Image 1 (tube, one colour):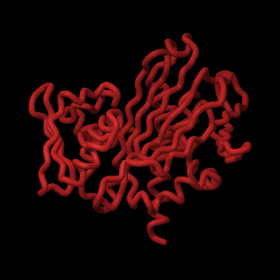
Image 2 (cartoon, rainbow, N blue to C red):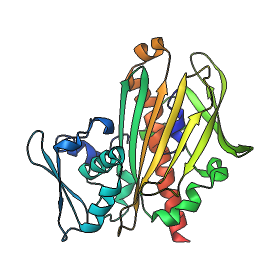
Image 3 (cartoon, helix red, strand yellow):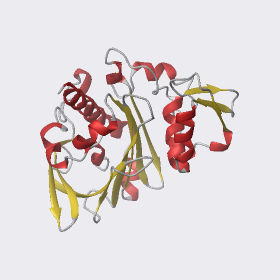
Image 4 (cartoon, one colour):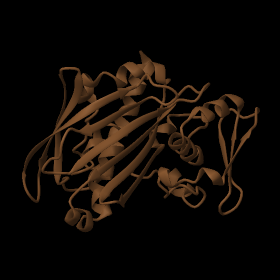
Length: 286
């Protein structure tokens, strides 16, 4: 239940990423574990898109044109690591024939008694054009949860919880999203999670939206996540990077296997990522 926040923001690994796994050194490495000291950043004005090279087991090169090099140098270290991971996944490149709909990446792992997740997806429009959609929190329930309770890849059965609604509301100057879910197995019942919105969508150089619980609940001790928007100069699209963390009780942390989280949560995240991409396509056409 604890990673359900990610559902509103973002097959689980596309075939293209499966093929890249052996070639991409950061495929199974969390962003925070990337060592910037092992990277050589070089300017190549002939490049339209950033390029990643593996020089040796522990040495890597990133080639950037001047505009992208200047962008990179403005980033704080953590955002530099996000940028490097996206470059290593070869997401900054020519996008044709809507191939971006399969360009999704997800990493799920346990650390410090919490479930952690990273997801990356391409949004096929400029960030400036997408911004009104991103900040229209009141409309999220109308489109972002489409098919959220339907199993992917034709699998039978149902998820052990259903996502019922996502409501936006305000209290004084604070904005919230109210997520309602119901359990279909195990301990049946309905639950409400209120998530405080921290809107940094106009910040530079990396705008973002963060969500956090305003107190512990029956489902989780702590829950939060940030959706960052990486928009490179000169490119007609941007990339979303979501990182989320759910701290649970020790017994759940030890007993719940990652493959269960994978089937129950990550599948839904992929559905939401596709909803975001399709929504962007509709906006782009008007």
